[in-house]
Length: 345
Image (cartoon, rainbow, N blue to C red; front, side, top):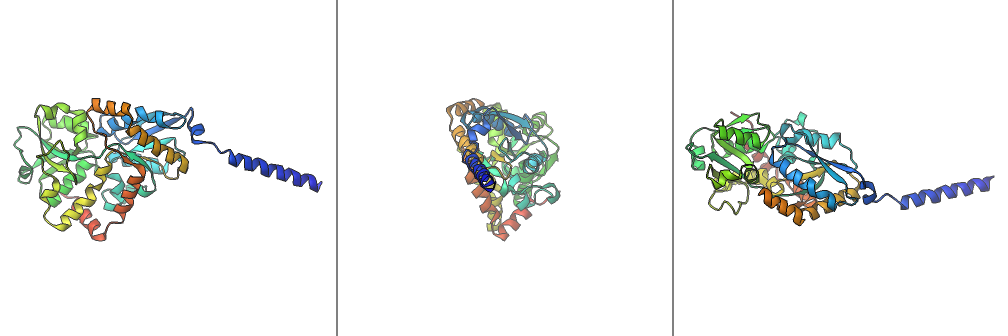
């Protein structure tokens, strides 16, 4: 009897060992499944354009060729989507997301109230970014704003969706750091809504949106000289704007430059994609590899060309390393950046 029990136990051990050795592969897991791509902005936004471009091409490069299903979850400058991905989304690789490039620094720079932040950006599974972004400030032509110095001398109406958005944060930065006179009108859900308000004359122009969004959503504005770009809000300029000054050229002190370097660092990962924390490592690795292949795919690049948007990718591991570096910034640089972005009139 004892011998039979031992034999049975040994058999169970062998079965368990075989099951462990025969773990489900990534391709087997994804075959026949869908991956939801949660987009933290409405359908008219630049983030939506980029995310749907990725959705149209990513599945071909994933093991098992799952279908990618875009799903818009707008609100609070994509903070709602970030909180959902961190706390509620399945952690098995069937849900990924697209959020604002500045949201990962919100806990560090205190740009969003702590009670509304329910995520640690360093624990997300970063997949990659499709573009390095250069944000801009522009005025509708004929409204008396021909240079950034004009914005420093009289009131300029610009728009924003939330305190977490670049449209709000960069306007605050320019007011506090460079003496701009930007009056921020809140409540626009996305860049498309802001552009419409500019065209109708509700706003003088827009500060904080990326050049790629302007080119994708209103390509005729530049070609027909309907707008004048006044400043590049980035650490490095765009070759298409050789005569437009960089924000750094207006910095007056080393403290100013430290603040700019920290606030604008996320521009290098301008269209980021991420997964909830705790993904199985092999699935995160598969998502990262598939993203890298997709960003080089001729089909995606051809689609991007037709949309007139730039593709200048950054890998997921590089984004994670960037965040680790930024969160290890010297206390004086963090203090300068927080002071620069503080709310005010």
